Every structure is written in C-alpha cells, then in structure tokens.
Image (spheres, rainbow, N blue to C red):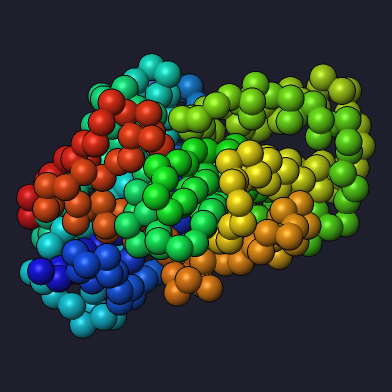
Length: 367
C-alpha cells in the first residue's frame, strides 16, 4: 500500500520552488526521502510578482510565466529523482501546487499557474494540480489546505498542538484531541518584511531578523496596522498578496505621514507578524498546548524570540521537534494531497476552509 509521491510548492514568498520526495503509507506514516529547493531566476520572480497585481496583457504573461515555472520545476524533479536513485516510473504522481497569482475566495476563485500538462510531459509522471478549485466550488476559501496534512500526520490523542506555517503569509492549525480541527490564515508572515528590506537594502529577506533588531517598534503604526478589519474577521478566512502588499503598507505609512528610520518600519512589521500570530493562537487555545513553527519563519530567530515572549509560558519550537523539517512541510503536504486524490480520498477540512463538506481535490494530468 506504500507509494512514492512528489510534492511541489512555491509560495507567496516567491523565493523559489520546494520539491519533496515522499513515501506515503496509509497508516499515517510519511517518510521524506529527499528534497531540493530551486531559487527563481530574477526574471521569473519579477514576472510572477507583477502578475499578483493587475497589469497589461496578463493572460499572455501568465501563460509564458507558467511554462517557465513548469520547466524549472521539471528540472528540479528530475534532479531529485536522480539524486535519490528513483526512476520516474516508480512515482505514483506529482502533486503540484503551482504559483498563486490571484486568490479571491470572495469571488469564488483562486488562480495558480504552473502548466501541469507540460510538467507531466517533461517528467513523464502523472501530475495532479489545481487543488483549490474544488473546495472553492463547494463554497470554501480554497485555503489553507495544509492543516489537513498536519492533522493526518501530527495529531495525537493526548496533546493539544498548534502548528504555525510562516511563509509569505502565516496560517494556523489547531489540533485538539476529540475536537474538530480548525485553522486559518492569521495574516502576513514574511511578505511585508521581505518587500521592505528589498526596497531599502536590496536583500531578498532579513536573515534572522537582524535588520529588524536594529529598529524600534512604532506603537502608533503597529496599532493602526493591527486595526485592519482582516485581523478581526472570524474564521474561516484566508488572504494573500491581493490584500497585504506594498501598496497596503505604503497606505499605512501615508495615513500617519511617517518619515522615520526604515529599520523602525522593519521592526514594526516583524512585530505585526508576531502579534497577529500570537493573538490568533491565544484566541483559539483552550488549555495547555505546544506550539510548533514551520516554513521560512522558523529560521528567523528574532521572530521566534518574539513569539516565545508573546506566548509565554506556551513553548514555541520548530516542527523539527516532531521529526518534520520545517523547510519541507508544505511540499510534503502537496505530495500527500496528490496521494489523497490518487486514492480518491478527500483532501480538505470543511471546518478550516468553510466548504460545504469534504471533497476530493485536484485535477489529474496522466503521464
């Protein structure tokens, strides 16, 4: 009953494509056999970033960018299989998330590009993609989807666990024995932090939050940002670059006529991420819990310090403490979602996405 699946994920941070090779057993066991990350070439990253906002000739640009994404992903899949000594014929399917360029659940759609037919052709492996549409069709948010994998892999009968994935955006999964699993997007993760340091320092990200450490939090700006209606919305809810982006940040600064030190903005943005996550976790917690972080945010030591202080005495650790490398959690999840689709099992959690019920997720492109 065990099968080999590949998961491909590129998230809202737009830093590259994560690819994981997973051995999945129905008895809630998943072994990570290997993984690679392929950074985006600057030109492709720029193309994908600009597609997240309205612009000219979007259909053509999306088509070309999707093919470039698929070619890069195919190179990564083939390299990973070669590294692991696995043949394409041994892989049951690839679960490809694609790259989200628009997420509008309020209008019933979420668009991921990534040319899955081309990916299947280049890898000679069945590709399963478009995981969000079926949940959206059932009146769900289409996101977050990873909590279903968290539940399958990491829930226990005797411990409350809160899992936080911090990529471009942050989402929570709340695992409570004998209770319905809940989860939602709490708000920005790294997206605004990355944008601000790229603008002022030309760096892709703020390593360990070191630049944020040099600044001072601006209380008035922080309070104003936290007053955004999104944070007060009840779950189910999800968000993306369509809402929290550089224009949103610039508008926040204009409202206060801000002209301070850029490092203070970086410190305030990190505090925004930490406080919105902590507030969301505390609002959903009943009794003692363990909090585990995955995604790029787990590598930001300053952010982890702030979460620990804000959530004290709740322990805050990386998912490495549970035996899951925080860098590969999402790619593993889409390998798992491919397995669920391939075995005709539902992949969503209605209590998380708000869908009318469980649904089998994904569109299949045979090899």
